[in-house]
Image 1 (cartoon, rainbow, N blue to C red):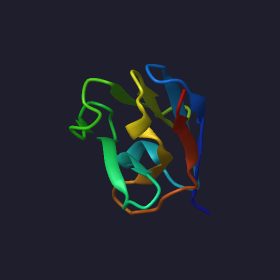
Image 2: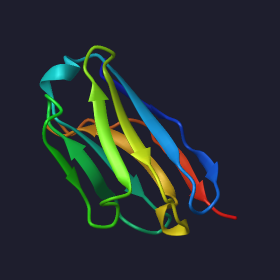
Image 3: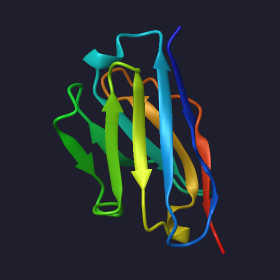
Image 4: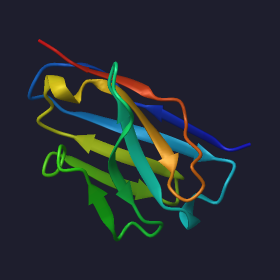
Length: 114
């Protein structure tokens, strides 16, 4: 069974940082491109970042470019998203997904508020 479990969310003040993790199982993680999405209340999903299977190619939405960094550890079957300089507009549920198959996991809530 494919599982993608995101963690690391929480409440953070504006300007703060969080590091999200996504533990993958049930498929050969190292062979697949991966993505992070977010969905804010009342809005559709937004792909914020992606990384290819080997980790050498990345994509960032303009809204997070320069603030977020995606990475992966293929030995640990884990995807990461380092988020810096967070603002209220970053508040959303964040979830990871297999870019090739579309499988997505349960998300983790990120709330940026003072």
